[in-house]
Image (cartoon, rainbow, N blue to C red; front, side, top):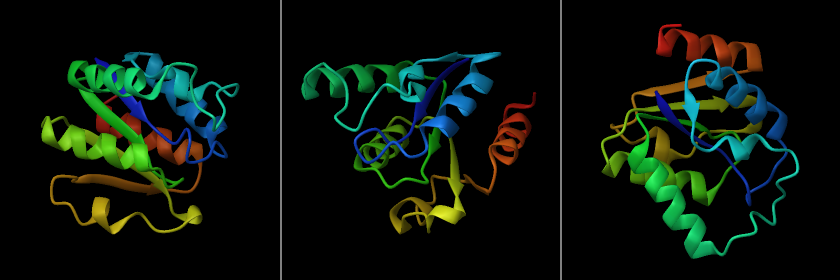
Length: 136
């Protein structure tokens, strides 16, 4: 399965260690199209390509993906945009949110399309959620 993993880059990289662990888990049995999000050397400055290239590449990956997994604990305009685009494409979405970091956006939580929204406190809990949802 091809997975588009969505998480904050320019919105802040405080949770990059969590992203890396989730991506590493997902990569065991799947192809993660956006594994660069777990790279600790990727800073809030972002990637080296220009913004239109990044947007077009990421939309192409969203179209190619079988599933979107979004980690939403760190507020990010890009993640919100990607989730709305996933909805537009009718892609299945799993949203993981660490409630210790605050509330999930009402625009995400209040959207009927997003049925699989899960709060977690530890990476182990998040991986357990993914195992259940992916039936691993």
